[in-house]
Each structure stands twice: as C-alpha cells, then as structure tokens.
Image (cartoon, rainbow, N blue to C red):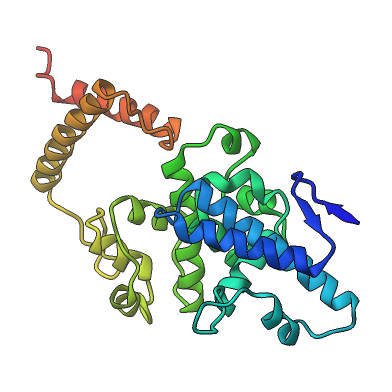
Length: 272
C-alpha cells in the first residue's frame, strides 16, 4: 500500500522502504557542496516528509517516536546517527508546512527560519503578514523577499528582548547593512526610545526629543546639497544598470519631485 502526497512524492507505507529512502537522500545531501541551493532544499524537504511518514506509522503502532526513531535513522561507521536530533526536528517541521514545495527557491536556511516563526502551518498566511500578496509571491524580487524574512526574524528577536522597533525601521537598517548582534541588542535594550538610538547609530536624521534641537539653516542646506549629489549619482547608476529599486513606494518619488520643484523655484532670483 502506498500513500501519495499532494506534490506527487510517493511515500512508502513500510518502514524498510523509508529507512532505505532516508539513507539514499542523506548520501545525496552530503554530496552537494552548496547547502543553500534549491536541490539541497528539495532533498532535505523530502527527508523531512519521510521522517513524518515514519512517525505517523510508529504512532499508529502505539509505539513511542523518540525511542523508535533511533532504529530508522541510518548510522555512520562509528555508530552515530547521520541525522542529528535538531536537524531531524528542523526537517520534519518544514515538511509539515502547507504548500512549502512552492518556496524551495528560498533555500533551506530561509525555509527553516519560516518554520521557526510561523504560527500554524499556513505559509501563504505567514507571507501575507510580511506584506506579500499573491502577485508579489509569483513575481517576487528575491533580495527583497529574503530581506522581509530577515526583518521578521529580527523583529521576533527584538520582541523577545522587550525592544520595540517598527518593521519599517528594521528593514531600513538591514538595507544599510546593520547586523543585529548581541552588542547592538545591549545598546538598544532598556532604552526609552530604542528606535531613536537605532536611527542615530545608522546615521538617520534625528531630532533629539528631549531638547527639540534642530539643525541650523546652513547645516540643513549643506546636507540637502550632499544628499542630492549622492541621489543623482545613484539614480543615474540605477538607470544605466537597469536595477530600479522596486521596493520604494511610489509616493516617495512623488514627494521627492514635489519638494524638489518647490526648492528649485525658491532658489531662483526674485523677479524685479
């Protein structure tokens, strides 16, 4: 008797076939040099599905999974299992997610992150919560998609440390290359306004809320000139290399054009 899964992968109903399949998969996994490509993700996902099938069979037999699992995991020459407990748990968790096969392009590391953060097992709901609608998922920008996953991971980490920072600011920080390591978490922890601390660390324009101190008109003028020079250069490069940043909201371009027009008119000599 054979059980057929939705993705067409045929799952054997006998334990001997599952053991053989797990051994063959692990051999393929170890031969792959790139641990984050689609092939690795596919192989590890299949391994997780076989493990879930084995667990289902064992539970139906009234046996305990944690005891019986040691009998089905292939062994190394020294007798240790080829699949460690944490690795096994990761694969089984990812394999339990609905429609996960559609997201193999993310690579195994991203799939594991999703499995750690998701509530329930509906991947599409999780992605929608990140701000991706169905059209985005089908026509995604890989770097932005991955960045959103990373932002979700960081946001969860900050919440665990009682640090309240918006997803928008986290995304901006990640795009500027900020790494949320222990040193930075300590810097943000316990601050009344960790968002302002983060902004100042990554050189965003910040007004001190305690003193309401603002920059002088000359300083503002000099900074606008510097930023505009950089912006013109970057926009020129973007057009030449056809790498238009799709994640920038349209209203930002409109606001930029609006304020640029006003400042330009104000800079012209007054008519006599």
